Image 1 (tube, helix red, strand yellow):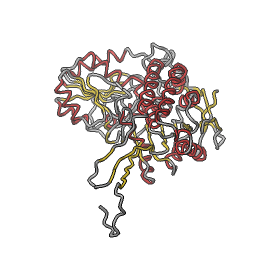
Image 2 (cartoon, one colour; image 1 turned 180 degrees about the horizontal axis):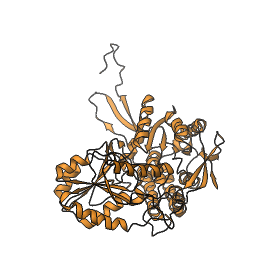
Image 3 (tube, one colour; image 1 turned 90 degrees about the horizontal axis):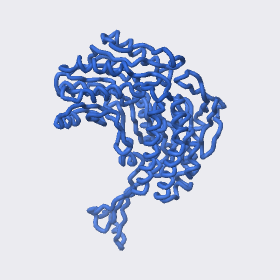
Image 4 (spheres, one colour; image 1 turned 30 degrees about the horizontal axis):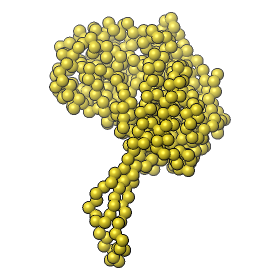
Length: 493
């Protein structure tokens, strides 16, 4: 099996523990690689390397334009190695190769985008009311950044977290999920080719309670950016507060996909199916609650059933596959448990609801695309994140009820609205308490557009120009232009 070491200060090093963890191919159900089991000693080495890189190393002394040039090189090496990186990510987490091939193009473009922003970071001259004082601000890198990424899209999370951090002049230590670390390590191995100085990008793999907790608690980490569950995000937020670290948290969702009776129902049905069964539902933005107008609910559900029955499960490398496996054994069991909970609470399963078997599915962790009806918004299946291919159908009577149900969860990440009325689209976009509203589309992302949530879906924004601000501190400078010494009366004017 492939054996991946830690990547610290531009070099490959063995873990302090001397221990290794298996990483399992979710399609075949077999270990295919081993990753290092990092601990607090490894974290300390990586943080020290990052701190040196951004304070006394060449990264610190480079002009912003030079940093941007290197970041553009990073985009180039991603594009050059896109096929291999996509194959490794598919092997690691079971995502469709067709999806990953397209995503790698966006990842490369994301690095280009932030490369262009590296020398656009500016302060301001302030016409302060104080006479004989020149006041201005500068924007400075916040410090060492700890980036904790999730298993469902590792390289995408590395891009949207680390590219703006590097554009700001920071150095990073990445702790990927222990379930999907290989693609991040492969990416780290390409950075010398791009000309990135040692220590700017470090990777410490291992378990969350060991390597992850040590990184969050490290005194020399200034900023934590995390993608994952709201439960883990809460613990990170509490820990960061003890040392006043800045945080960005991109957490879970229980997102409504809202279909009105005036919508293009064929387009809406396609959007709903892609929004919950794409990536086997393993995405924070999954449209797991279908809110559909009562006048069309039965007919629209039948339309969904027709589409969903044609979904093909199988090898994620096969271009004809629509849905791949659940990425990890614990997540596989969690999805099945939630389906049982929903049935116990009174939901009726009209499609799927079982482990999927058959030719080409042996060894993998497959769950049939599942549609539940007779769901009320108070049920656990409508309130708690499943992270699997499970859709709950809920009826509504008017806009007011749709908003009430849509907002009636602890999360607020995204929402979909399907209508041909521009007035309704604008009203709903304003009323829904989420970070992103998609109108007549779903799962439409852009690295140029800020993304993040409200309520338990997180804090801060990734993507877009706004993301760079997450990695900068504003410093104010006030210079007296008065040639005379101030009077010795302690009254300063």
